[in-house]
Length: 437
Image (cartoon, rainbow, N blue to C red; front, top):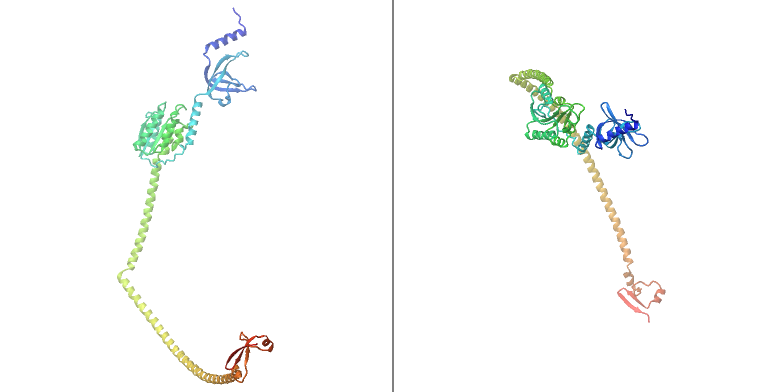
């Protein structure tokens, strides 16, 4: 019996492991038990159900942080080895990547952000309140279609349902859905489009996260209502749609009016109309009775008699008014005659007084003017005589003469005369020029 040492067993086992795989290997599992010491190496477990294997991502091997993938399903690539210290098997990780729903969710989020940035989530097409026809784009043999048709018929049997069959799962599903939505718009037979599918995994719902499908829904002329999967499943098609409901049945309820509520509304409207008609009829009866009484009061004979009575009353009123006015005018005339006579007497007296005063004033004025004239005439005669007596010509006739210089100015003293060389002598009968020799 051969006795093995621990090292021998370890080497044999390590050799078996190293020779078993074609390195590097890729392993799928969920990350757990993360431990990162001060050395910077990242230790964790990769587990599946009840099985797990230790892994290590050495510092400097990758910039990835294992904590970002905690509790997520990942694919790791590396080498399987047997650690001599404790005999545990571990994987020396070379590369780490997301797997399954995690990767899908990242791709979906990337597409969602892109379409949101372009404004594709801002649809606001108005849903018809009472749709005459509804197009359903879905798998023709799905439970979701049966549930929706049943709910629509239950709630609003007046609407017409048109089925546009398509694939709802697999690689070709999104292309199939796009073709049917485009056909709905081109056929122009319906008021709105329902895009529905039952629940499923994230991978099953991936056709509804297709970018081309999202753009097709956005460009649809008809409003689009989605009911895809079960809560909390939300696809990009739900974001782009005009209305998104958590289930196909909820979508059917949202777009269809309840026939019982409609019947109740119709009953309420009918009751309101009846009450309104009754109210109007009562008003009409009341108006008719009132008009009938008015017609009685408007009988031609009674109207004519009333007019005669009114005419008589008017004639009496006119006679009274005219009599009063005539008396008033007569009284005014008498009073005006008295006032006119008094005024005439006053005017005559004033005229006589003014005439006497005028005559007296005229006589006095005449006397004053004559006296003033005579006085002024005497003054003028006196002044005239004085002027005549002072006339220089008259003085020159007595033998006097006037000496003037060459400028014809009068020489008034002998000093001025001594200075003159030439001078003029004025006599009564003329002027003589002279000079000193």
